[in-house]
Figure 1 (tube, rainbow, N blue to C red):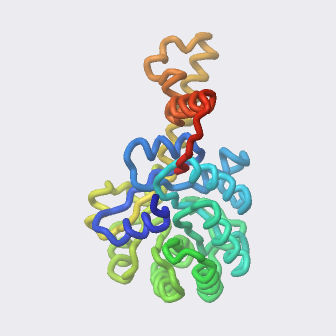
Figure 2 (cartoon, rainbow, N blue to C red):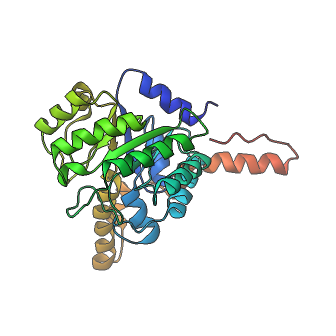
Length: 297
């Protein structure tokens, strides 16, 4: 099986846009793969909420993010693109972050130029570090790679903080520092998009955030505009909240979920998403004395 870094790098070289819905655990990552998407995005905000029970305000540590990423990469057979926040410190910390994400089987990560403590890119009140400081971290991230195919995505949050001109200066500086892909957070309009597209030669990532600051542009239009990647970090988790609340209210008010079973998978089908029958077959082969070579994702 080819390395996931190489698979993603090949996708970047080939025509077409890479669409990566956001996962916050192994189940959602597996569902994304089963629906035929060529990559999965590990959402930092979703990881903060589901793993440490906090909003996306810089609460998660590198160790917690890597634990989630490692669990996902052991579950899926497509590249995982992972949020790495600010790199969890300065240049030396960023160097270690890349090394540890590589060990976890991640194919790409993105680091951002927010000052710590960072916050969700679609919240107000962000601050950004200087261009020289971020450029140093990018060089450290690129030098940290032991696999040349590992993709370093660089995000700038400057648009909402210091404006478009500074954002374009940052894009140029970050490209020079070695970024493989540029991610301009919270693009607000077609005019912003046009400016960035004209000025940036590197592949661009679009962040599709429902109820966020950016227009909800369909994937075919994003591709026509020149974007190479699009992530949907919150689509699943935001929908799960609504569905979970509906079910809980049904239990509280009616004492049963019988009216909702048509919208649920069966217990067997639920476990089969994660390979129930394959595990049972493997156990049976061992019980019969066979020796089996297990192929991991």
